[in-house]
Amino acid sequence: MRTTTRRAVLGAGLASAAGGLLTACSGSGSGSKPEKPVAYVAPDGKEVAAAEARRHRAGGSVREVRLTAARTTLDLGGRKVASWAYGDVLPGREVRLTAGDTLALTLANHLPEPTSLHWHGLALRNDMDGVPDVTQRPVRPGGSFTYRFAVDRPGTYWFHPHSGTQQDRGLYAPLIVEDPKEPLAYDKEWVVVLDDWVDGVDGSTPDAVLAELAKGMGHGESGGMDHGGGGGMGGMHHMAAAEPAQDGPSRMLMGASSPVLGGDAGDVAYPYYLVNGRTPDAPQTFSAKPGDRIRIRFVNAGGDTAFRVALGGHRMTVTHTDGFPVEHVETESLLLGMGERYDVLVTAGDGVFPLTALAEGKKRTALALLRTGGGAAPAADVRPAELDRTPLTAGRLKAAGPVRLEERRPDRTLTFELTGSMERYDWALNGRRYAPSERYPVAAGERVRLAFVNRSAMWHPMHLHGHTFALPGGGPRKDTAVVLPGQRLEVDFDADNPGLWMLHCHNVYHAESGMMTLLGYRK
Image 1: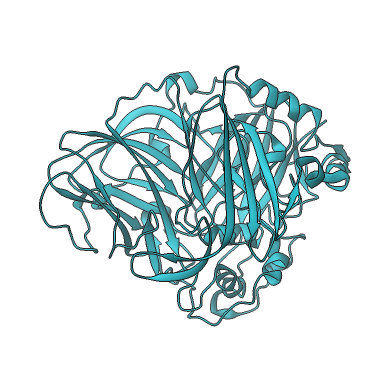
Image 2: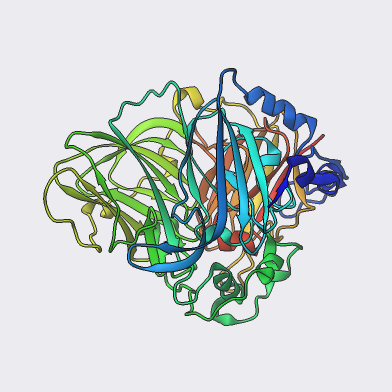
């Protein structure tokens, strides 16, 4: 097996491309003119090393992990599918460490194509962020790469590839960073990973789904696919280089609607919706005692589905979103867009209760069970009454005092119009498909405002790498925020982590079609 060092992976060519003189958009909106050439901080530059040194804590341990990405057969609960995964399990085995530790994870690639690992939600060193041909060379088949970085913030995170549509296979796993001074008291903890599943079902693959969607509604001409250049998360050229698409049923979804999401709920008709890799016909059962206080860490690892979650017969107290604490709020149901995470506390009742995740607007559910006593399990299609309540979303939350972003006038505002349509499948930012050479410049120490203006008829979960931003009015700290159709959402972050950082829609198929860009720190 070939082992590649960080320095060799970056190489002179990549470092030059990252830090060299490249044209950058001014970032003032879709009509902005390019600025003069800007020199950017390289992913392995001295500024990145200095930021990493500030994250290190004395006395932290090194958590060493080995991970293999390979083809495998997964059992979803009586239905076996051929897919790609980490270690033959779905989700991949949880990685857990404590804030202040260093993670040293070696990824061995036994897949038939290049891959990578992105650490969703973590503020980490830029050359470990896992974006092929931006922060690292892709890990080639038969090769390996060691990701090594300090982790200084507790929270609920996860990791997945940033290569093509690979995330919509079985390549994902939770990453839990414990707080050495944990303020919450609870008896048990569960990690609940939600997913929509198509890979290996009746010949379908995510690449084939993307190829169908790219033709546009009604399989007409794709029209607007010629914006800009390049491809997203590996790009459309990457899709063509993947394994040949197999024959399978149409997966294009028509008519999925949700008032909570502002209309159109999604593009893909998935055959299965999963909780921790299991279908509703063979759900995972969590055991507890009546009265136990339980922390549930929810992760939406889906490709195209928002999930409305509820625990029948219970109320949930929301304590965190995207790893950061919030002022506690009780709710009966909760909505998670792709990439979002929420932590909740529940006090277990006596009996058997459904933990149901409704695929919002798609009229299908995923299921797990809480059992604290005797009784028959509810049916696979159970719909607890709590699902009928208006779900809590991030806009109703406030950041907890210690993590609330201080009020400050932004030094720079970057406006991103979210454009595209299902008819043409030409998703983009400011009307331009992703091109690695185009970056929106920021400067270290700035307060940066991101203004998302959704010009499309679809909702978009927008994700920023390497940082967390604050929602308006003392809102929660987030790295992924849902932007509804016709909505303008302004979020602020402090530019305190140098490098080149992705900003993109976390709908896998929107990102792959071009709805992504880069923010670059000026040298």
